[in-house]
Amino acid sequence: MNAKSIHRGESTRTRISAVLLVVLTLIVMGRLCAAEFVQVDDPQTIANNPAFNPPQVAKIAEYWIKPEGSLYIPLTYSVWGALAFIARVAQPDEFGSFLNPWVFHTANVVLHCITTLIVFAILRAIVKNRSAAWVGAAIFAVHPVQVETVAWASGTKDLLCALFICAAVLALLRSRERNRGVILANVFTLAACFSKPTGIIAPAVLLIIDTLVCGTNWRRSLRTLWPTFVIAVAFAIVGVIVQPPLMTEVTPLWQRPLVALDALSFYVWKLLWPANLGIDYGRTPARIIASGAIWWTWIVPVALIAIVVAARNRLIIAGISLFILGVAPVLGLVPFTFQTISTVADHYMYPAMLGVALLVATATTTFEACLQKRCQEPFSGKRFLTPFFVGCVLMVFLLMRAFAAAGTWRNNSTLFANALDVNPRSAFSHTNWGVALAKHGDESAALDHFRQAVAVDPDYAFGHSNLGGFLRARGQYTGAAAEYRELLRVYRKQRNFDPALGVSLQQVIDQLEQLAARHTTQPTAQPATQPTTQEAR
Figure 1 (cartoon, rainbow, N blue to C red):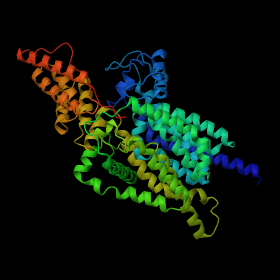
Figure 2 (figure 1 turned 180 degrees about the vertical axis):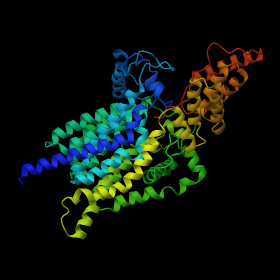
Figure 3 (figure 1 turned 90 degrees about the vertical axis):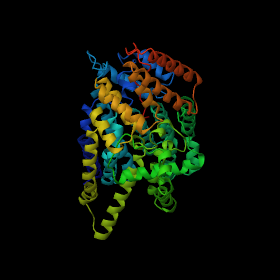
Figure 4 (figure 1 turned 135 degrees about the vertical axis):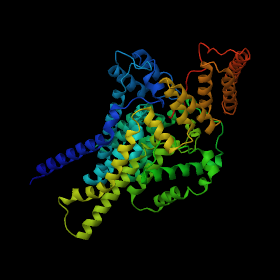
């Protein structure tokens, strides 16, 4: 058999492996294509976004000029805008949206498949073992913690960001001319940052790959990758300006490393035992400090760091480093708004899964080498089957868990029912479900969830805002005034409280008290506030 035939056969096996990866991904994620929009960011970002109902090029272009919702992600909004032209329907749904959610969910599944194939190519280039690379990419594709990012229509930003980061890595690994690879890496880094602020980790990811995997001297690597660091710094500054954290309490500096280590420990646990997955784990700094968990959960991540220091295998060091780096922006070292709900969330793990995939591929390669040495004979056909069989044992469990997790994203009812099963004290879930129920006309159930939201967390501003607006719209002015007083109390505790907002809210409270004093029971023409929900970004 000549070299050309061998190469042709290898290419065919690689293509078959890629097809199998896509099929495996669709088995788990395919059901998400028929999911609905949910009451977690989707109404604001896509479903009821005026720029998309109907889609207008001029309005979509404005996202490149100014941030929206405290995020500057113009490339993501441009992708949503393009999809809106495809998703446009003649008649609006019950909430006034002219967009078919299936188009956006299908796009997410396609993006995830593309990223999975890029990860497969990256692993093949690194471990030089197609079957081991397949196992690593399969873990990336169907691990249950990946479901949230793919299932969530608003998760497109996370998918795009990770896709471009992985594309930058592949460009650096595959380019025959180093300068060309660096240029492509710069372009993909820029695209990642335009997709989501997390893209600022791209330069560090490239540095890890270039030094630990490619063996480039770190000084030389910095000299060639410096443009990507300039891009990252620029976008980091933009992020600080447009997305200041809205928090009532800020974790003291000395406690933040412990909070970060606790988050890392949580992520490691979910990787090893992906059960009880939900949109709100309620793992806030205040709660882990009060529970005492913060004083011992640091052991696991410190052990990981010790492995990095002690390990002689560069790929193990690279894999663990990429995993930690992938979640670094949202570990709590720098406060962010969603920390008032939970420091940890499944969709924060998406870029970190590249490191996990590398660790799995490296472990599979090592396992195969050990078997080959023990058997002391060539594997030939077994070379593919052996690591694949080993991975199947784990894959069956992951497939079952991931398939079940995907089912919880079918609609608002399934999503929030699962969320409250995982965390019954989730004011975030109670409020969002209440808003969704109110839109469906189930006012009694909506009111119950609004009341439970403020009961489980008296400092949850969105709970008081929605309950107050709900009561006012129905002529219950005394109760509405009480909720707005609570809302004002919570707002005043925020670091960047706007006094003008306080004055405006006090005027609303005074108006409600006057209406209550007149014993007026007719609802006002407009509620004091429209339903609002906290963004899970």
